[in-house]
Image 1 (cartoon, rainbow, N blue to C red):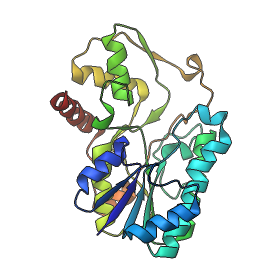
Image 2: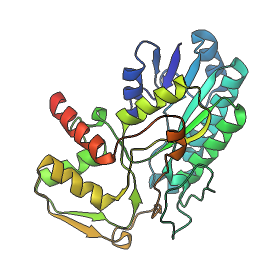
Image 3: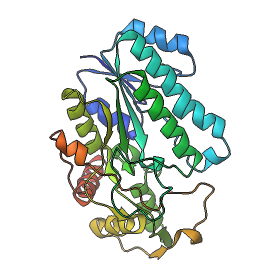
Image 4: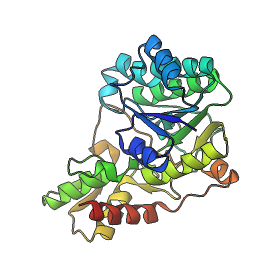
Length: 286
């Protein structure tokens, strides 16, 4: 099976390429511009993939509030073009979305299921929700995976490519950290998400599926566990969201249920175990 992977240089894309190495056809924006339907059709006709995985996205949550057209162009209209072209070519499409499609229910305290009504509170979340709809509407064979709080070793190159690296970098510089304690989610390893994605593909699962590590925490709780496992003494303070104003609203509770994933025979390890594995692997790559 030939699997085209767009966004192959990102953290998730690289882990997917690694785990699908024999079948993977890595692609970047240089290879394919989703804003050009003719180019999309030409690439599909040229490479003839059996499956297309789209990891490309506009992920600048705050900037999207000032750039809604760009956010929707990349996260909604691009996937629509790709989904239509894949449907025409008989190619199954796997597309990644986000927990930020939730957030409107401020009193939520139980994990969101795939059947729950979404309610994004940011332009970014709205654009990703629109992309989901276009992909699912194009073909019943397509798969949309919602995930959350991604971090992977490919983002640990010292430039602060993910939350874990950002926390370790700031703490290492001896600076105080103030992290929100009233926003809850599930930090997820890109390696684990990639493995689950591979299993979903092999089992020919379609539709909408949540893929995150097991459990949940606040962002402050995540930071505290990072420092505990890394044996780093950090000046960490928990704060409410109102003390850290940002242009885009964040969900207060966007924990995703993986019951549907489990019903497909796929289990995810606790986020604390995934973090431990990440910290160990990043040391090996240092």
